Length: 61
Image (cartoon, rainbow, N blue to C red; front, side, top):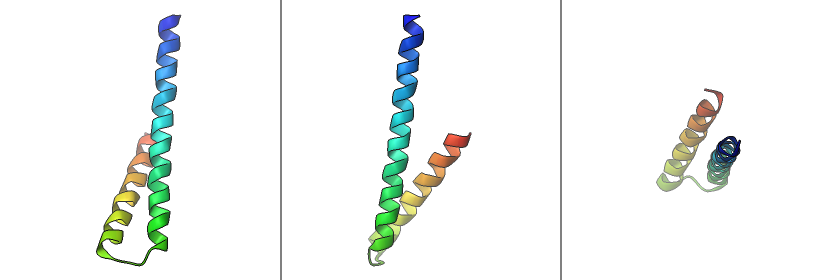
């Protein structure tokens, strides 16, 4: 029973980490929408967009 509880806690931590990273990527994407377009901002926007797409794809896989 203890092993099951440890695995459940580990799963909960992994889900929390994944959700946190998705929210960080979304916040970064929204921030880049508010900034003036420069090469660095465009790069950050593309990276954060790709991170969100990948995170959502993993979530539904």
